[in-house]
Length: 105
Image (cartoon, rainbow, N blue to C red):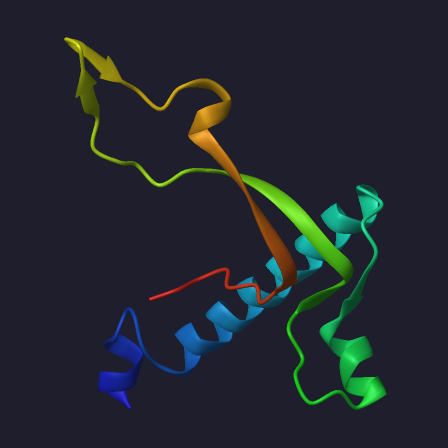
């Protein structure tokens, strides 16, 4: 029992703490999406419907998210560097669902 209590990363107490943080961030995610007027169903609602897959958030319709492009090597053309600045630095990704992970590792 002493070994379990002395482990700062893994054990029953840490599992409970990680679970609590996960629940808290799912609630924050739901509140944020609701305040933005984005329609979605929660994992609990999906379970009630009996769906086979239950992400934390299932969008009612796909949502476009603007994200930074992955960094590429800078190209040199005619003695100038081609930086990824401005609108070219972003791209759109289609998101249908979110499985929230407050902690990962």
